[in-house]
Amino acid sequence: NIGHLFREQGAWQRAADEFVTTLRYKPRDLKFLLNLAGVLLEGGQTREAVQRFEEALQIDPDSTEALNNLAWMLAANSDPAIRNGARAVEYGERACQLTQFKQTTMVGTLAAAYAEAGRFADAVATAEKACALAGQNGEQALLKRNRQILELYRAGQPYHEPAAR
Image (cartoon, rainbow, N blue to C red; front, top):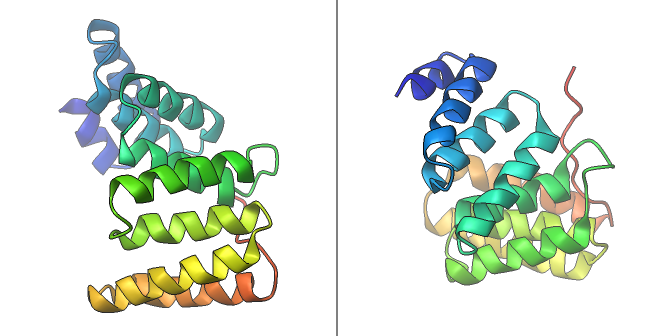
C-alpha cells in the first residue's frame, strides 16, 4: 500500500523501492512486479521497466498488461535502442488475441507495433479498427488520439513518443 501511495504522489523512485522490498519476500508476485514495472516506466527508467515486464511474462505469459505495455514500449519509445518492431508485433498480437481484439488500447498498440515493423498496411487497418472500437465504446479521447496517429501510418511513418526532457 505504501508503494501505491508514493505512486499516486508521483514519487516514482520511492514507490519502486517499496515494490522491490515487497518482491524480496514475494519474488513471483505478478501484481507487485507489474506495479514495479509501471512505476519504473512512469519514472523514466524504461530499460528497467522492459526487464520487469519481461519477468512478469515469465510468471504469466498471458498477462495482457505486460504484453501490451511491452509492445507499446518496443514500438513507440523515443529511444531507438529500445524499439524492436518484430517483438512489439509478437507481444501486441498476443495481447489482442487474448482480449479478442475488443480493447481499444491494445488494438491501438498493435497498430503502432505494425508501423514500427514497417507493416504500414496492417498498421492502417489496425488503427482503423482501434478508431471504430473507440467510437463504439464512447472513448472520445482514444478516438481522437488514434485518428491522429493513423495519419502517420497512412504517410508511412511510425509513431514515436516525444523524448523526455
